[in-house]
Length: 194
Image 1 (cartoon, one colour):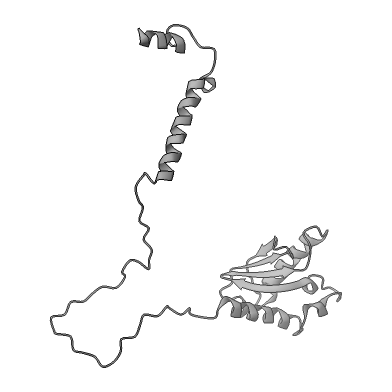
Image 2 (cartoon, one colour):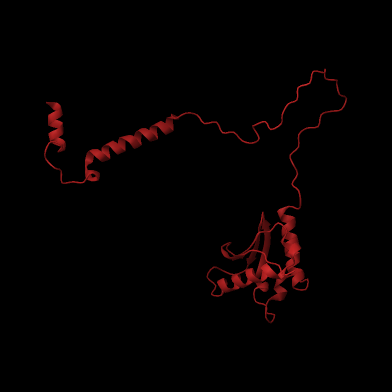
């Protein structure tokens, strides 16, 4: 009898409900209970413990088993050292890239010397150069709201991609030109002519 009264109350016994299922209160009540159970279970740590393994925690060397007795050694065993990176660091590559740009403009000591020269608009705006991995960032001293910002950045990226010799681009995949706020204006892949 209780089941029949519940079915009659819920509208499942012959009467059609005029509300869609997502507007019924009992659907949202069930959804709320599921969410509460999930949150409480997560806070209490149910769901199993996860072990994260890293490359440093897993052994990578194989052991060789020898039947000969080990002879005592007078030499101390060297400790494991971290691998040293091969090649120049990003900072060294940034300095070399900066020097290559300066050399391309006659070895200027400051980019401000290039400001206002005929035919040169963007080099006088260079404010900083850094290399991060395969990206060479050239920062121009322009604000995001400057009217000629986009044109200046596109011309700088395009010119830099072909201006420098191929050895200046070793390990550099992209030239990224950004404004003073660090917002990327344009980017080009190196395409040296020499």
